[in-house]
Amino acid sequence: MKSLIVNTSQKYEIIIRHGGLNQAGEYIREITKAQRALIVSDSNIAPLYADILEDSLKKSGFLTSVFVFEAGEQSKTLSTVEKIYTHLAENRFTRSDIVVALGGGVTGDMAGYASATYMRGIDFVNIPTSLLSQVDSSVGGKTGVDLPSGKNLVGAFWQPKLVLIDPDTLSTLPAHFISDGMGEVIKYGCIKSESLFEICNAEIQDFDDIIYKCVDIKRQIVENDERERGERMLLNFGHTLGHGLEKLHNYSGLSHGAAVGIGMVMMAQAGEKAGLTKQGTA
Ligand SMILES: NC(=O)c1ccc[n+]([C@@H]2O[C@H](COP(=O)([O-])OP(=O)(O)OC[C@H]3O[C@@H](n4cnc5c(N)ncnc54)[C@H](O)[C@@H]3O)[C@@H](O)[C@H]2O)c1
Ligand SMILES: [Zn+2]
Image (cartoon, rainbow, N blue to C red; front, side):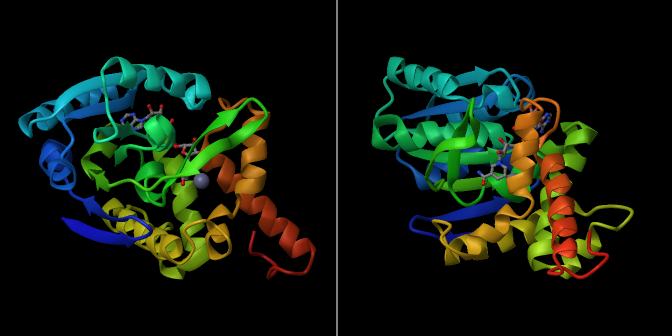
């Protein structure tokens, strides 16, 4: 097991532990007195892992309910968030209860945003299950949804109370999404760590090591610049063009990590052309 503390406006722990999902209830009980816990998950992940999480939460004394949405970026909208609010209200969730996101970046961003805004903010825990969300999106407190006019246009900074990463969940992640998550890993290599960039070239990937290195870099950057007024913008390398490409593909043809990968190459090419970037970088 590995653990890191993120020292933002709200301090929280990132736990990286194989099989950690089975102990989620105990970990979450340590950080809240909540009576009720809502699990938010998508239609691919819920059938695989929601029962394990729900059993663990029940053992730790939580009254649980589960909200499942159709998997995919197309669901990351205000209309899904409204359904989460309705579920919370109908199940009488109060401000002292908790939301637990179980899934990839889409789940975490959307459940986080619903938590930031329901009753002006309730606690949430992030249990990321995709490589992209384990190395990147689960840490740092950026939550939000897309509008038809663009990605992540509505959102809030809302830090989780706990991030619980169980690398075992990657065993069911389709290979395409492993490559996709590597888009963000390569980004971390490019912006902060030559050794991490080199690891990406290895034949066999040690994901425990990769996850730890990426979240540690993100932790440091977010601690220095929680609200993205300076250094945190580094994390957006490849994203300006990447987001444009995702929109061009109607948020379905091209996944986020792949779009960021293409965006980084295009930015490096532009940098080379302008004489700002060393030739051959792209
Ligand atoms: N908040 C941030 O700081 C931040 C950073 C980077 C990206 N993001 C956002 O994250 C989103 C992309 O995240 P993503 O790639 O995780 O998307 P995602 O949540 O859609 O997950 C990708 C796919 O993998 C499936 N999946 C996830 N975990 C699985 C598992 N363990 N087993 C089987 N299937 C699994 C999902 O159902 C989905 O089909 C984008 O919306 C992006 O804007 C946010
Ligand atoms: Zn990203």
